[in-house]
Image (cartoon, rainbow, N blue to C red; front, side, top):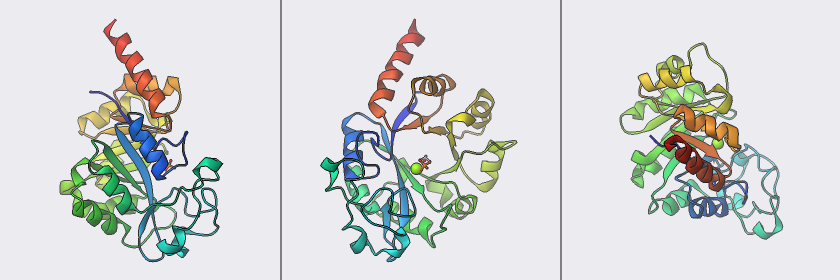
Length: 248
Ligand code: G3P
Ligand code: MG
């Protein structure tokens, strides 16, 4: 088992997160998967942006849900990061799927519905993945337990991850009861007990956000299925070091 290196919001240390620049760079640098965040516009278009508001990562203000996609697509989503990215735009989930389809990349779509529980987000995203025939290599994840429960109706052909940064007496059991078949957890939750419990239930464990050497090594040692990292190039190098040491 080899820990997959997944570009978190794309190669988000080098390019503005969740934009084509960050995805393209993640791919070119050798990442094995891409994680991205999805929210819903006023006209029900799934778009890739981390925050519920556009303030931090674009030239605009206000909530994503109050913009039509047409309005949203005019915002500059790159200058906040660096002036050379001023042409970056918020893209739709559909554009992303068209881009990723011919590439050999694992996909993680995080439904950002824990603060605003967007109506029908689950079915809109699911149906789009189905149309593009991308269900088999995609994990849908969410911090929202109710959303996991709603996703369970599609369980037979999609991986559903419960996302959490919180400690539970028995996280694996809790996630299983919701209906999740994978776990995406914050780094500090990873330990041998969790890994053993998850392994026993056949649940992959992926870890966020792993940017530094020590946590990377910890995840490799624990046999995590994947790490979400802003620095995929660095993680790929460290994984080589880890594999080399293991052979000594
Ligand atoms: O999906 C893993 C990770 O992205 C969850 O946290 O806030 O970076 O979206 P966040
Ligand atoms: Mg995310």
